[in-house]
Length: 545
Image 1 (cartoon, rainbow, N blue to C red):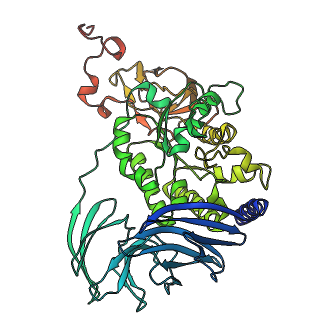
Image 2: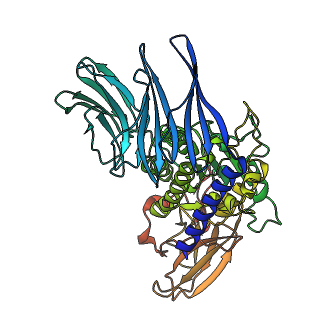
Image 3: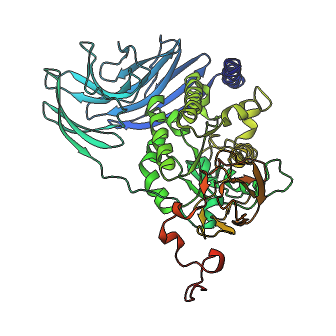
């Protein structure tokens, strides 16, 4: 069944991309403008599905990708004093190849790089022998590494081969040898590479400072607060402005507080930690500090759209970043809900390559949720299954030149996201009873028991199971109080019990461990400062004799 559902979604995505492209017919869009040697140039994307070409306009117009079938997807333009290069990905038959245009030679070329699932925009390195090399981030081993490639000799040299994804690099020196700094989530590295000998050695590894630990709050409001962690979609951007009133976090609060809502929860609050333009790497770099500064039991994660659009890291690297964020939230005791991504109707959606990456990252997000044992919601499927094949477009902002590009959900789209997150939040079982204490363990006629109250808005009651034998807790009762008195028989002074929390939706926490209410099971500190029948004595008063 899962395979059928996924195949159906893939079909809908492909149909949406195809229909969207065909409805626009031949379409052009300005990608970039630049100036070189007092001449103004512009790069144009020319769409004629299933082709997508790159046109250079200056004194004349040149189709840089002429003869290259498939989609030609722009990466970057590198400009020096005497030359400029235009780089792009040639995407055909579900595989990518790096291509470039050399202005001096007035020549386009597809490079002989194979086996890569991802290639980022390269840096051009001038060598002492007059040739040039390309330094780039690429993926051909399920994580991102640094590579050096010489187009003239078709020689590829891997500079790193790490078990994690490199998150980028910086060229520090180029004096015949290249000194390169790379980074991961935990450390910074410096390498020295000799392009003539094709030798790379590590010079230094600097571990990053230990992250500040984030801990759960004891404030009652904490248990009904959810943190929205993401980019401009979480921030609430629509048509160039922030609309908090329509943001999914705000609409969630309204839904959860509505008694007529199927998964009615009650009162709640949100913290908006969305930052426009952020990638998953940016989120990973700030998550620990954000969780120290902001308290909330629920952590709603929705990031990755900008990774797909910007093509600056692989799907593997994005998932590694998201896993890092999830681990940070779980380490502080948060309840995590992670979402797949929303589609876009911007110029990027005309590329089939965009839809493939969007689907692959969203599929990976749901797999990550299972791996990390956190809740996952499938926003992408919800959008694409809304009045297919083109109903998803009605869930996105209008395209307004120089203001909005169609990347952000509108109020209706945010309402769908709010419903998915709200349902997942309400489905969590309540917190189990904590700090269970028998207040008078030496009592022979009564046992007074207390535990922490439950502050969750959808809390209903506690379940108490008890008996006079630990292996058969045959008695059961419920209470909304966080204390209870057991009456004992003189000939059965022993008592065993366990507790459970239940919410309004009948979701139940795990049971506590089984407690024996005998004096030998509690320290003397737990038996001090007790009044009559063991109830706590208010400060400044003495216990009754």
